Length: 255
Image (cartoon, rainbow, N blue to C red; front, side, top):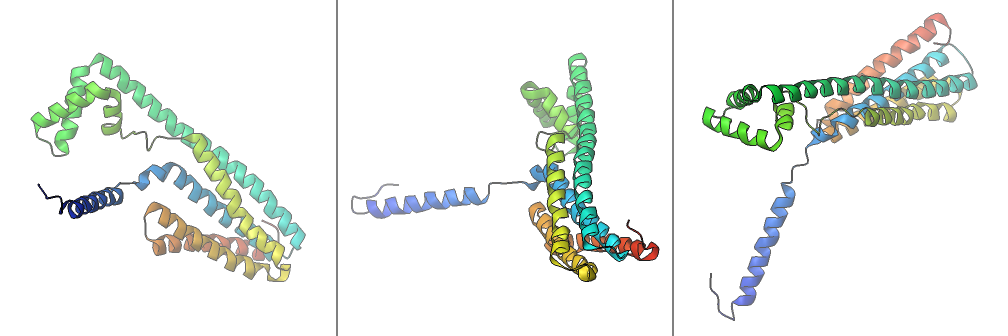
């Protein structure tokens, strides 16, 4: 497009505006997928939920048995420490098992690629055919991907293993232990703030609020419905606390 000297400022301004609009469009459409959060988000939500529910349930069970605030607090702190360590160990061991399985499958795939490359190429091609590509294009895609990173292509498309979703045991263990501790501290704060005669109602009400907030936060982080996530977490937490308090009332002992 040609413009005169007099038209140049307006033309330049228009070009700048179009460039800025294009950049804004690109920035809006950068895809930040939430599946990359799955590894730590699942462990974090599980830890926080378990911290609130187990500690609040323990406090309610002990309080329902008619014990003192000091005894309730000691039981709660012991539950916090034991629960955090248990969550960390459990997450680490379970995710290590997942990582071992992924590593074993990749080792086997590496051996098959070295021994039977033609068969593996045909296998990858069939995967792409099933996804909707015609056979010629599927064969070309399989060829190029295997030339670039054969193991990565088979791990991702045949086994469902990718870098974004790979098992990370230490990350899961730390996230679970840390969020369990944070969740467990919340009911204990209520124990410090209220007398023992009011603890059952205070801990129950506050814990339900904490659980609803946790559910909404997890729904937001995962891109799900905040209301549905909050209701789900609150329902199961309330059920656990009610059952534990019932045991404390029934037997009159610390549980």
